[in-house]
Image (cartoon, rainbow, N blue to C red; front, side, top):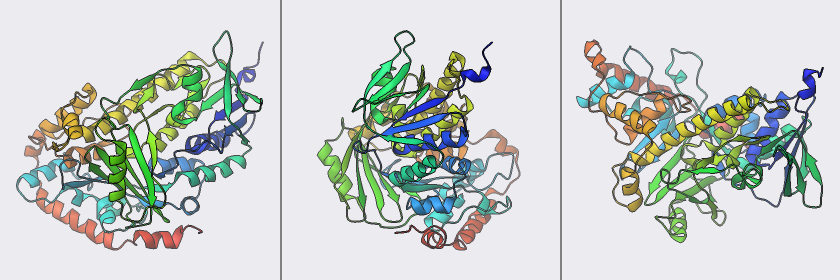
Length: 502
């Protein structure tokens, strides 16, 4: 009788480096401490996307799972801190709002806080929703410190993530992985060899003839999808009709205002990101080639920098969507090879992290049981579709009609899953969570209100409550403003704990 251990995965080849490859290598080398050889093949000749990256709070869980020290990581990636994203000109020209990490105020009654805000607002007794959010109280003042663990303190009501140089992060994780026996091979994959009967990948062949065989292959080869698409012909779902941007110009600039948040500014046919790092600012203009010429998009980017450009802008082309399967046979696509959702809500690195987490939760043996593969794909598809809906929300909820792109987005057909959420909020201000929603109620609330989807009526339960909403909101706002002033500035915090070495 064959011993169960004889079925275990004994070798893994990761094709491609960059953020996806090295995040995967680091996690696998940390989890598979013995009995499995992990090899990563990458070529220095093949560039990674490598722009300044913005992230969302789960990245902290990933780093902690590896035992990475936060200050050491921020120092080595020339990183900074992120309390959320400011959106400019999205709902209408001249309008701005903040999508915070954390909550608005604190739950103080059976009825959600935003319902009381809406009631006070109707009576002209409330400021903008942003003003009741600790992340914005700190961010707008240019201040940062990690939240306090004391739940009675308003400084416990926010979360944070990071901005960092993605190339430096990959290098940081490469060192981590190599210390844990991951072998890096420099080379280009020129051929993928499939088993004639099963269709599984047997090995990859490198320029120069070397072959790398493995039980399990992780495709981190970027948009190209060398294994998942070119070899296994998995197929792709194109979501451009919902998310029409398909190109981006990216350029670093001299450091300007050192905000502890990302900024997204809507333009005529897309939007511009601004990501402050310790040594520079990352910028990009994401746009739709159906609605704007490449040269015009480049000019808009360069005209809207707050510092001198440090390089020539680079063009990135993409098709928003996902593979039909993320795991096909003995290949798992992680990162851009699995699909792409534009960087509007900083989900790219999170989707790498989510793919790795699912792999560890559903780690296979050499039988590659279909039940396991199907479950991985089911969860991944749900995750992608819920994030897709959240991104579409930003484009569809707009009063802008000044350009072809915005008119198209305001009038386009949207998924039923999203229409359902919009309708519930529009009627009663109710937030309807979906299965596998990465973004919680506060995030959906920020975009609904920020993009002017104001409820027609309030929750009927509100009429049965005896709460002086205006007085409570005034007290909350004052407490947050006072707490923010006691925090160090973003620069002071970094100088003290995690200043880059050069």
